[in-house]
Image (cartoon, rainbow, N blue to C red; front, side, top):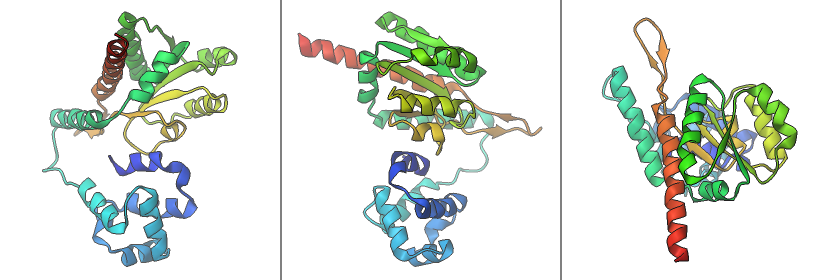
Amino acid sequence: MQLEELINQHYSKLNDNDFHILKYILNHKHTCYHLGIDALAKACSVSRSSILRLAQKLGFSGYSEFRVFLKWEDQPEEGESMSFQKLLDDIEANLKFLRTKDMTDMCQLIDAADRIFVYGSGNAQKICARDLQRMFIPRHRYLILIEDTNEFNLMRDDFKVNDLFIIISLSGETPELIPQARMLSAKGIPFISITNLKNNVLAQLTPHNLYATSKPVTLSDKTEIVAFAPFFLVGEALFRAYVDYKEAEKNDNE
């Protein structure tokens, strides 16, 4: 689990002082773990106890354990990887995440929902959404694809608490997406977010998060490319988890 995911997971416990410390840590990820608790407190202009409380809020026994985590997270790459190698690295990172991710709560939501809407915030995300829609058809779960913001707004008054949304967003920060997600939360409509592995607003609005690690690669001509294979992989994993969930349910009833 990466630091950004821990922040999302424990977001409701954190205060302004915690975010001030985290801002320093995130901006100095390659060096801050060299600092003892007193040195880090001085660098952040906070008390020693503030650092300790933050570590405990994030689930660590104390600063020493938090420091080891930060050091582990900063494993350097062996030189600058080529584009294909970075794709393989992304896929391996996603496999590592998926091997330990419990999706039971998401499978229960999918099974109980009267209707399931899937929404991708960009062109590539829409392709992922359509693929997810296709996968669930053999299991008689018919996902309703929302094409764009206008379509969402036209349908919003008809959304019910027994519905479920699956929202796919690269950044989790798309400006037109956040008000829609806040509206769903306010109406008590659950949604699953699939975003890049980083601290993002969308993931903070729901406890049901899946992360697709996809690090951008800058080419020699300064073009930046982002792999979407991890998003397809995570979508497939969600579908397979649901298949296993239904098979286990069937076996329990026999």
